[in-house]
View 1 (cartoon, rainbow over the protein chains, first blue to last red):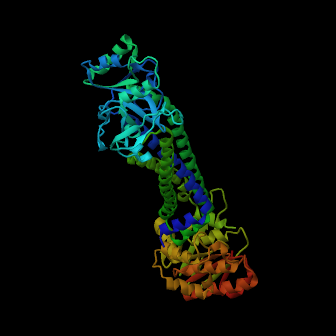
View 2 (tube, rainbow over the protein chains, first blue to last red; view 1 turned 120 degrees about the vertical axis):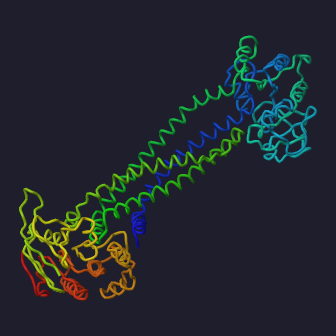
View 3 (cartoon, one colour; view 1 turned 30 degrees about the vertical axis):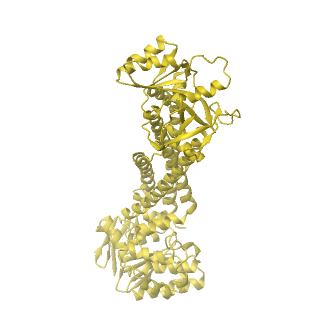
Length: 395
Length: 209
């Protein structure tokens, strides 16, 4: 028997109160953690997906759309640009590498990107099996695609026209798997990479009326040789050509600003819930101190000093925070995992789960601080307790 | 042994001043203090227990003038040397009977002996209730637990505030006899304050406030 064991018995004495306090506190901790984790994971993943791409050049339109479609592979392209014009740009001395990409097809919702073997350099990807593509109609699969459809070297499949799933218009020529990339945890994992000619060939056979029409691509992914590129090239392209240049990093910053409002709102809601839960804990501890005033006075007559009683109530509060914190972490992890599964399924994006210990510690510290305040306020009456008065009003 | 001299008490400067009679009890002597409600019986008891500080005068228990002790020392002295019995609330609600006695010893800073606790519960005939929560006990069982709580730590002085007023005649006599027996067994002084005339025959010494 010691102060701790009395605290634990007090803690179990009113299970409903205790349960509610833990529930509300753990939900607010879970919300805060989940928001922080998701924001961090998404930011990290978006930045990760940029790979080494410094600039995207595509058809005129919204620069954000261009970045979303050609870099993150989530939106529709802005249109096509001339392959010839793009190639001219590739020869600019400020350009270190320029990788053309061309869209048009998908396989069960996963995008098929027509490009060159340089595409994998942008993501520092290496082959897990097989080889790079050498001729049209050969494809190299991202790791997630291969796993999802259980495709192996030598397997063939038919692509569908368009970028979205559920297009019943299938192409007739099968694509052959010649290689599979190692997992990169970048967008490449969810792409099917093929030669530019594949896209052109497939769509020409579709009875394009003018066989000698100019070759087109969707966009050009550019890596600069030096930071000078950022200063001169985009402006040059935007004012002197029919194409537009977009800087992924800059566009993503803008995107954060748009989505940041939503994140902020939810964060504030989580903080408000945290405050409410602290008030709840304060009320339940305060009520406990008042309801048990006689018990506490009795303990004083047993020889307990003020410090022991304060410790007893404080331990009870800490027990609540401790359990709520653990439950909160578990809840946030389950919740975040669930949401991520959903996102992966819907948007074909793989987002790595980041467990940020610093943020967990911060949130835990904040909860502890707030609850300590609540405990402090609740146990104040113990210090000022008039034992004689409480004992003589026992009836 | 307890000795008081010239005790007076006042709750507030504008309130009336209570004048308490001097008492002096030798080893194992008991005292019944009778008085009507509102006459200051509980106040007197609380002054004796060191829960209230007198305006004048002093209380000596085993030769120690208790009101000259610091708050912390007073808490410890009270926990170790005084046992209090109340009218209704006798123990900590969240603990069971056995745990309450363990807690009593813990707070008094005395060794926790489960055998001593079991023996006492047996003497008071509530050993079957050892795992029951306080709220599950009957009035009679509660009062027995109250007695157990007041003697488990072998105090020098037992102070009882209206211990029998919520009990029926049968329980009243049994409980009072148990309390007196326990006080005797522990060589402790027992002071009971009450307006309950039923227990007067059990005491040799009595005074009326």
